[in-house]
Length: 149
Image: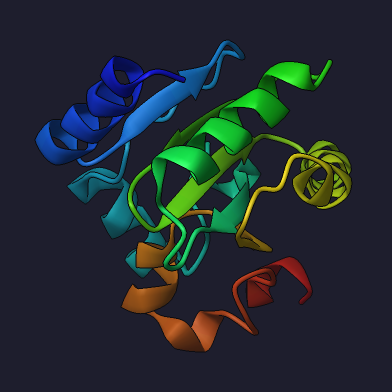
């Protein structure tokens, strides 16, 4: 990665909040009042949010040209398709199926040491704003209580 490419990533994050990457199709309209109202009224995740799983790499204090270069090199080496975004603190990868996300998380776990990518792996269901709105509906970031009732 040259200085210009890293600057493009920085500029995108500073202007839009995120740098988007990957080729896999993934439609997410983002949270709006209709989705939030459905959630609050029905105590259920609305569609398509109920089918959203996110693999996460928390970059913590590791947002640097070297680490982002290592991350992008690792992702280019993967044969699987992915769609994601990153900011200065986290890289987020989107999936519609939990099994597919867990498989990708395993790839990340194995690939990060090989490509010298610094960060901490985690995953979650849907947007964290849902959990923030009604934490009592969640056992943790991975388990939405109505899914197990």
